[in-house]
Length: 381
Image (cartoon, rainbow, N blue to C red):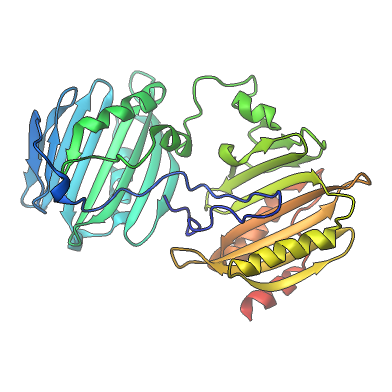
């Protein structure tokens, strides 16, 4: 799954400072080859407008319908507490983002649910994703994951999986009995990774409401982090969320990574530099790595106490991205803290301003090495 145009940059590959992105999901394979379909046994069938068959078998039950007036195919299936919804319309009927928005409006107008919240969102020209949660009439927390995409060139296809929070991962696996063109729907997505991405925290939570694994990595609560190895404290606003897969504490290395509601990514890490390595040396290595990967360095500066660079690169999806990296000496024992902000070029000045407002390191501002005017001029050039 792409994340705000950053999917092609899963890690900066830096020396001891991993800056991975929330890209845990893989796109559904559109137009799976029909040659792969052998004999299929099924309990139900619906042929979409694109002549693509949807088959299902127990434990799934339901039916497919076609509304000729709306040129809408709709397949709704249930398996206990889980629901799968498949919709297809002609491409002329809108966009992938329209399909996501239409579903959100439908839920907003449903009286049977409360506390509707969008927990994940991402989109490109050809596909879009949405994660949502709500509370049903039985006071159960329900989560849904929706994937909309351009399908067979001339259609828009939406597939949504809905299940209670505690059963989401378990019931996700049952979708192997729902086939589209002979292939299980959403088969290329891992249920646990989807659940994590849309905000399902799991049953085992610590006293602070934080996953115990994250507590061990230094996350104190939803807006506070304390480095287990080096003791520095990082705070942020509720608009930012910790990325569990890229937050960890090892013997000589700590890292916490967060993502904003706008899919901007921030990473802070701490480590002890070798005796013969200075901040200048370290920044030179990072800059060399940037240039080797095709980035253009717009600004750079460093001394023995601190350093920074600003770089631009193009993601695999063709989006121009900006990396702002700052390194600073933390104590006399050689401990250094590294901070990274990654955001699209089009949003970068807003992303930086919001990050500087949202974060504090030991109560002090972050990512303020270069003046705003320097950055603006560098980006304009």
